Length: 204
Image (cartoon, rainbow, N blue to C red; front, side):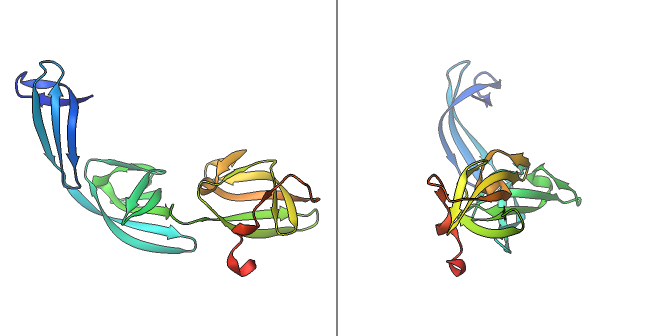
């Protein structure tokens, strides 16, 4: 339910949207007033602002410019689409030099984001009791990892003991939220999840 000015009631009243047509520059609705049942059209023009977007893909970044409707709010963690690529907002810089977690488009200077259309480069620190080794895998963004699960990479078996995410430690989370995982090397077992196929080509 939305509120629009009704031409019959002469007031701001609740409406039901029957049809809608939206673009980056305007929005047009066919609406029905819930007070008097009058059906009428409502049209809005949308002002756009050019926003610089820096998209991170593994160890490289690319700067693009996207037009966003003024008045809308962008938040860290929100998903956007830029030139057909899905991205997740990680940081927002405002025109007055502040770094914030959310802001109206009117005040945004730069959006920092990570691509969601590429695999997640994920580091795992594996301890064998004497030394700690690091290995990197490239997994789908929605791949789920869980503490105490046993995984295998080539001939090595390990149990996850800690998952470090962008918001702290977690027992279970998807790859896109994980910063790093920590594990202990264990003896071979029959029950495991094989991650070998997610090694980069140069290590296969």
